[in-house]
Length: 288
Image (cartoon, rainbow, N blue to C red):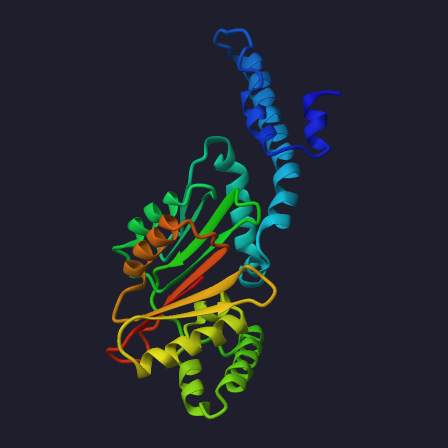
């Protein structure tokens, strides 16, 4: 059985790297022209096509089996396609490099890279330190081979009242908030009215409820705040950090540095800053 047939049946991720090294020892070919050149181009195209097809057959099931559930819950389909394409074509595994993808209008950036080196996250945070970051999320694959993060630097957007999916999520989140704080109907409605549309798109109803809990606490207290929720029958937990009058970009680097320093195992993180509706208090929250 040939190497290509073995990979097509499902192989280790290292086989993707092996494919790139194939045929490096082929004999030197002089310059070709005319029909020879056309055949040569066709052969190169076929080789690239085979390599991509084999990478797709290996990496697509791995990607969908290893990214955390909340990534699929909060990431639009077209972005999943873009992320998977970047993993396949960006040599993340072969060269251990980080791919940086900016939107055309520079309002959103995605970083995709190897998950084993947490220093990469600190370097990423430093790159974002001077941006007007309003929110972002980081996800690690379950086997810790990949991290994927997306950050938004755009202006705040009003809620899309014509989007039923947005409205359903808001209604669900409101019920969760009222269950925790039954006397907060007015404050909860104020929180919802000032939510950024991108935040609602990329958050679950539960994440919105958890964020409200921290914003509610920060508005009534000074300084920095933390909530630690330990999950029952599990070694995992959730850490929520809240700060006022500190940009989301500025708080990311020191927080990620501490996580790297104490070797915490982080599966996901989310950061958001509220500018609209809170005057000079401007709360920022980070969830791990």
